[in-house]
Amino acid sequence: LLIIWQYSLGSQDFSGTFSIENQHHQWSSLVARTHSRQPSNKTPSLKADRLSPLPVDPIQLSEEERSHLQEREFFYARKAIRGKLRLLLTAIRKELLPLCHDAASWLAPDGLDASRGQQAGGEYYHDLPYVYLDLPKHFSREATFTFRWMAWWGNYFFFAFISQGPTMARHVERLLASWDAFATRGLFIGVSEDLWDWRAEPGIVMPLVPATREAAAELLARHPFLKLVRVVPFDDPAVAEGRVVDEAVAFFTLLKPLFADPEP
Image (cartoon, helix red, strand yellow):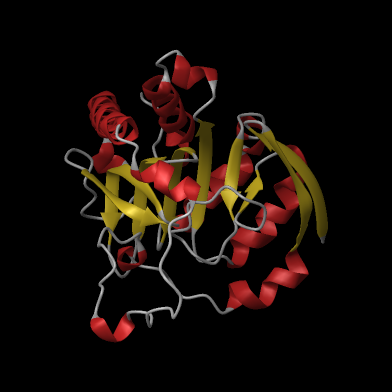
């Protein structure tokens, strides 16, 4: 089965093909990923045996590099922006908590954290800083169930629902049964073999649109996890207008029927 698709992300257009047959061998050999594969927050070690030998020629800085070395305002702005991003994640958590009041009845692993969550960040995910919030969340060897709310510097806001383990099949069943309700909402399905890949690129994600339902059904029948994604570029009007929290709540509310029964 070959799917040809095209989609836009901010000012960029992407198109490509997606072949179930070509991916079958990779997906059939996957093992469940655990949270130990998440982006590292540690600064790379500079051990002596890993240092490159000194060049013979003098070490010179280019004109552009010398210009960068004189910059100060960027780093002051970066500190302020990072503080605002953390406040934004805190605001998302505040808005999510009332929506998690019925978490005990969800199709989710035992031990789900639907009240505290975890906020963290780092500097070197593909060499760029990031901050994120996981809420609700559950990570274990047997199962993963989480919503990740992430801001990745130089890229976008990245919202993801991840399900892996005993309850995944039910989530997939509900997704496929209500495909049309999701197919016009700008969502993507993670198709990468790496559960913790946060790039929104062809081969990593596939658009969740009417034309990809059959491909998604075949993928999810053998893929070890379900990953649904919403990307909000930094130049999106929602960011300029201060509506990122609203977008996050809308994403959670849209996907909640996959794991929670309707309120009586």
